[in-house]
Length: 211
Image (tube, rainbow, N blue to C red; front, side):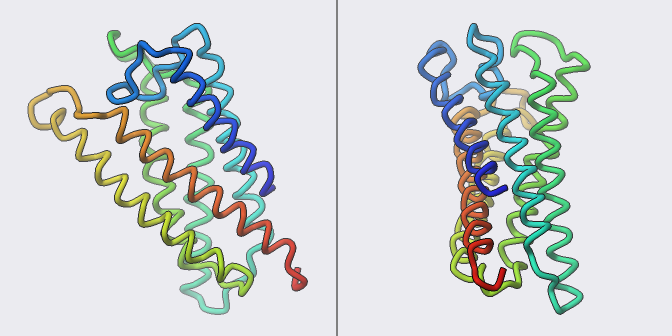
């Protein structure tokens, strides 16, 4: 499961990086990565996004199977809530891959609205999962990884604040967002970092003699 998560993250990262070169007309500073789907190599983005969603789902299944039950009730609630948020993130990423975004110069469509709302839910779900799981994993095998997970959780929160700040011109004066593409990519990189760190922690946990 951990290797599937790492592979999914790698596929998404390679797809997005390749599309930066293959579709240079879309500025990474201003355009969301979802718009790459409309280029000649748009299938790369769809494949990468679906791989990311499947990899995240594999991480959810791996964590759910390997994490020991927390002795304290609050600890159990926190871990269960974190796993639920991770499942919501996985489903949201898969939905955004199956339903493409609307072109930036077209009116909203049903498919585009599904993509947009799935992305919004996913963008909120993973920070919740990161915060809850980074502080709620009870097994001793997770102690070394917990520090890294908490670091990435902080990076996610900072990136999320910057991302929402870039959207303020829309709510204030219906002006274009500021550096939306850059802030989105920073956020996605932080998400990928936390997921990879959790996958590495899962590998270490599985390799522990206690398991």
